[in-house]
Length: 167
Length: 109
Image 1 (spheres, rainbow over the protein chains, first blue to last red):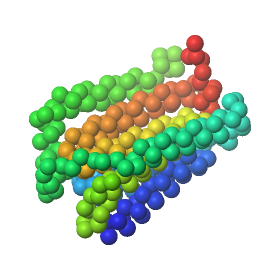
Image 2: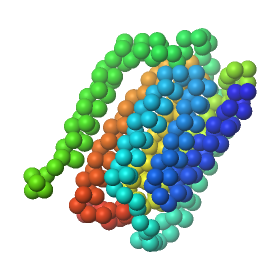
Image 3: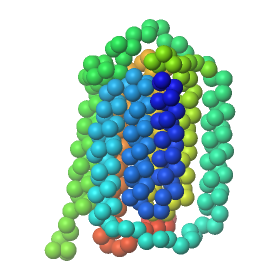
């Protein structure tokens, strides 16, 4: 059962990723990315990461993608572009990235993973364990991310303000 | 090879990592090939998501919560990156059309 769920979700994720790259209109790329994120959230659930699953759907597929859709609606449809300035850019990049994929695939062959000592899956990945990690051991990184979000919000407001000479 | 027992089925950790690698390569193809700056931002989001998948897969393999916590942090960073990148794009589009990323090369040294 979990095997079938994994393969369906993985196929959906790969198809969505191809859609992100292949669709000409940005709005279709964004919707393909939403498909990828929902498929990945199913895979997070398979990996018993319940809290990451919820955050993936609410924050990523919900908030960040709606932000992208807003900006696309604001900027209007993109016009079809002509050829790029760099010749062979498409083919060279596809070639090098295929080599990169082959490298990563060959690295995965025959990897021995360390087996964990304990196997208590009833507590693993729950909100309690995430909260216990975030508010004890990783309290400082957690607070630093809140500062990062504040800085990003201030920066976005500063960038999108109305200039004085526009008034 | 190391199999995870998930719901009675045997799933290999390498499969999750291979899916993550495929999604990362698709995202980098998007960054390199596409010329619309918005689509490049979307492809960067795809690459960040694939990194999250690798983190969560290793977290499950080692039964260690740190991978999931780091995935949460990287989601925060991705959200901040999307907000600032989109704000910059909107600011550029207010002045002129920039449908080709090659048009935005004034900062080139």
